Length: 508
Image 1 (cartoon, one colour):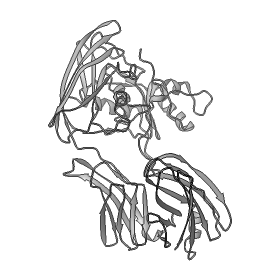
Image 2 (image 1 turned 180 degrees about the horizontal axis):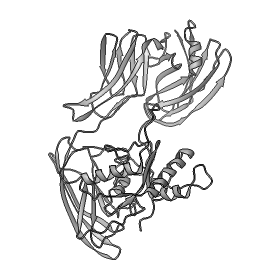
Image 3 (image 1 turned 90 degrees about the vertical axis):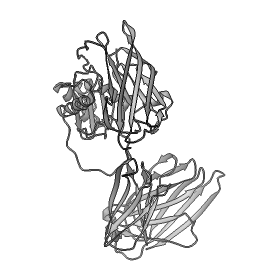
Image 4 (image 1 turned 90 degrees about the horizontal axis):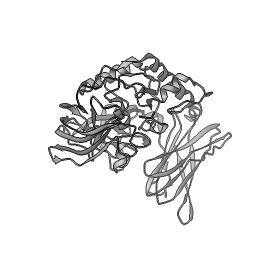
């Protein structure tokens, strides 16, 4: 019998931390079940799943428990805030997500989580509850799999036969592992789309076993290298319905026709194994694409974006402001600089993809008000790759960038010559290969502020950005108070424990 999913298979959001976005409406159980039925029907899978109000209520209660305790787990502890027997029972038979929504007609939060999605596609799933409340989501997959057996053997696929516009690539993510990791595909690998096959028959059950004996995929370039898993693969036993997943080891060609086939031996639970074979075709769409950037730094005559990424090649940074627009390509290190010195509001965008690239168009934009950015010019004699910039409002922000050698540690102490009370914190944002991060906070009042940074240990040459902020109230006190002097003490400790101290001075 399929056992309930443990805590380890909770889906975690695979996205970087972002600024809070506008609140979105909750998604109800009937809505989610309706979205899933439409998704299944569009690919030829049995639909008509009934929404169970009791199970949906349990899901909603468990979402509340997760939010109250800041946890994502398949159980509840009696006595903790938000505990309820209904929420506990729903959690034990559900797939869960946190910050992966909102669920909609165009978006299933589990699309990149193969184990979880496979359960939602199970042919015998007939009744379920679901709820999305705030950032938390829950959908029962094991509460009821009592759909009547088919009159004859049948095979289903996702994508269905003849599907068009199918994603040509994906990066699967779920905790603690994806199916690909069980067959040698490292976590975070960009592959072709997972192809799902599901088997059913008059004498089969949700716990029947399917073992792939042959699988193929061919496209415009000929045979495609595949990895395959099924519900007999170690680590997946008991978690998948009778069926298999075909995993192209590399992204497919966009806008191309592919033909797949699979043969499996299916049986178990007192039923003699027999052969199932299935063939189908689908057409890919454009490759998915996303662009991101983490830092904007304003210098006296330029603006620099750092920590930028783009799935599509050839990303371009543009800044559109008073009377003109400037642009520059993104370099391989995720950095781009555009030059300008006009005041006013500038729309800064990173864009990639589009016609002729094979990737979906994508952009990420922010507004920058130039008068709010006060640039500090480094003193003479600094290391050639050291930079300093300060943003006065809406928050005071100091950014330093130093390229460093192996095993060096960076600590920064900042002194403010003004009399100011400050509540400050330090964080490390890795644009290279941080192997350890630890944050710290120091609060000091008086004429001088001291700020102890977080600590970063580098496993190889790279860069780190340390950012310090004070409250908007203190930022307003600093703004317009005349010249300001910053004194930075940077201490590097190399692998031979040789200590060097560099003093950086900058004046507004």
